[in-house]
Amino acid sequence: MSAPNPAAIKTWLLDLQSRIVGALEEVDGKPFLRDTWERPEGGGGISRLIEEGNVLERGGVNFSHVTGKHLPPSAMAARPELAGRAWEAMGVSLVTHPRNPYAPTVHMNVRFFEATAEGKDPVWWFGGGMDLTPHYGFEEDARHFHQVCHDALAPYGDELHARFKKWCDEYFYLKHRKEPRGVGGIFFDDFNELGFDESFAMVKSVGDGFLDAYLPILKRRIETPYGERERDFQAYRRGRYVEFNLVWDRGTHFGLQSGGRTEAILMSMPPIVKWRYDWKPEPGTPEAKLYTDFLVHRDWLEK
Image (cartoon, rainbow, N blue to C red; front, side, top):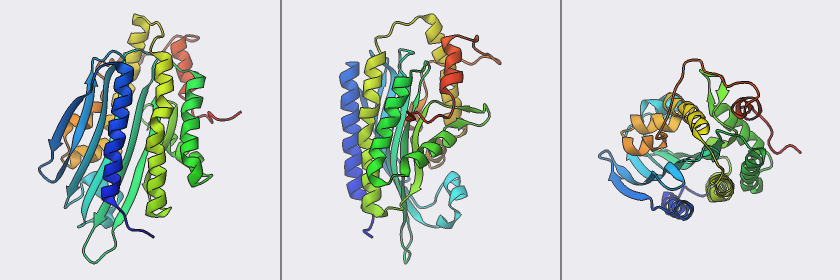
């Protein structure tokens, strides 16, 4: 089994960030801001952010590579055997919030973690995935997104897509609402079972597949006419996104507890959000259809 190669991973992650930003800039027509930062405890990153774009109301594509001597509480709770090890974590994480309510929010993350100690074998794994969060659902969008996810994983194991889809459905679930965040996608963590080379190849396939999964959907929806009703519902549904990221998301917790850059960690927050007390959509409306037809666990590839 080959040893982990963090330098190769970092090179690919930086290239992935650049390619995704370039593709999104081409769709939006406005350049992303570039902000390089350093972390006093070790490491740093590059934040690429767009606000008030022509298509993207807010979006970020961030690269980070951080190191430390002691793991934060969120990581120690999950892996107490790593106590006392030095560690490094790197990844690309993105979220886009389009202005048009018919264009879905999307999240993608690919990351690598390694913990080392003198005289002991390194402990390492990959994590990541992508998921789609529509405000108004379209079956063709959900099917396309899941098909690309399936195809990215297929060369590495027939069972991976079903397993990672189920993991995504369970992870991106607002337990306090008893409600999925969106239509799902794939999610995996602590993954090293294929050995380094094949595990890295799988992660590259997922990351490189993101633009194929999302750009056709974004381009298909950004010219759809909308009004205040749709914008109002979009802002209400964005509140669920905020709740998940702050209450349940492991990456957000790890970043804040490990002394990461707050501006970069919270770039996933949408710009305009609303909450209402015990609001429910009128039956038979497009807003109600999101709950009945899309915020459910489905096999989107079922014929």
